[in-house]
Length: 276
Image 1 (spheres, rainbow, N blue to C red):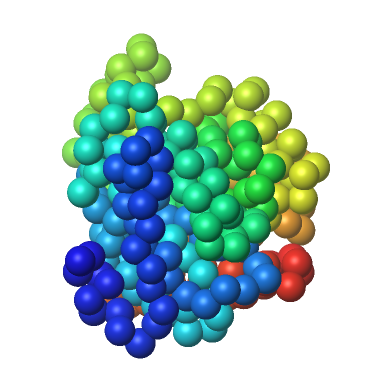
Image 2: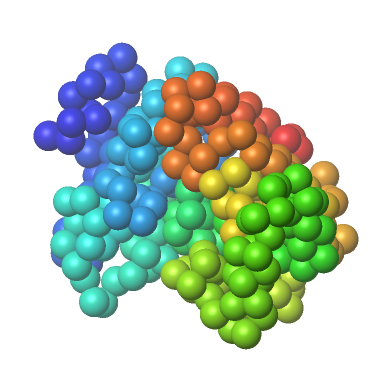
């Protein structure tokens, strides 16, 4: 039995098998409802319980207000075997198919932290059943506002740190991506990302973006977001927060509580089809 299932005895949870041969597994939590079901794919090498059990805490909070969620392991993570024929995107679509056919789910939100945000982005651009995307340290691009914030930060440092900063900057300008989080993730280029963003807005997809202080190699200034994605980034369907005081995996309990409350409020705003 899933340890998360054993602990969450106050809410309805169902163990679901899906994907090729039913070899992938996840936990559907919460009562049936009219709004989107939130899919929470495992992020990086974290199992479906999430970093510091974030997905379990979130699932319980959502269930308490009548919202369903589905946390699951992508191929090669947690309890899921490696499956060359099924990547993270294909696994998400297989989960959506199963939840729709066997559990009455009709619309879906999807996403999470880091690579889970990337999975949510990719699936939302492929599957019209996705009506909302959760992007925690998701796809983004540097640009003038990022470098402006870097320079401000540099000016606040001691002079002895400036040379180290300059060496890192020169390395980036020469194509050295050792400090670039994008080197380990599957992002579209900026032109493609802007086109995808605009199509999602045109399709009435809601988005919650949160950038943390643990994403400082990619995001440092709130105005960077609109620069990266253009006018659609200011649409009422889009909610964006910059939390420089939080780390990438929300290690502190106060950080996790803040994140869970924000996501719960956002998902609550989706249940009646209202803008968050």
